[in-house]
Amino acid sequence: MAIRDTFLRLLGELGTLAYELIALGWPYILLLVWVAWWLWGVNWKRAWAFLGQGAWAPLLLLMVVSALAWSRIAPGSCLLLGLIPIPNFWCQLGYVGMLVALMFICGWLQNVFQWAPADINLDPPPVGHGDDHGHGHHH
Image (cartoon, rainbow, N blue to C red):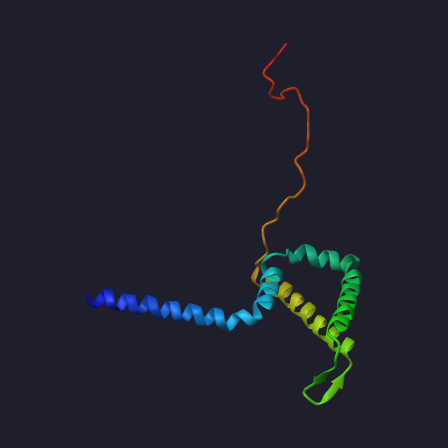
């Protein structure tokens, strides 16, 4: 009976631990999803190649436009180190830049630890009409 009681207490403590971990991570769920996507959802070997071929320009444009939209949605200034006021657009651009930097760090980590996801071929299979096309009639 002592083992059963100990096991039930252990399950209760594990449930408490799970609840506290979820409560700790919930405010950061979008950031955690962001990191998980860029670590395990993107094949960075291919992404680096595309960025090197010029995809950095649309990424830069997307960064500026998203910071501009964010600055209009949530107007106001922020304080750098709690002392220096920064205009809203530049503050939001800094946040967006940090997200993109985190994205690149995830790409670097994926390369270091070889965590590349499996390639998924989204192209439809080729449609061929050969002699053996499954109709069962032969001449």
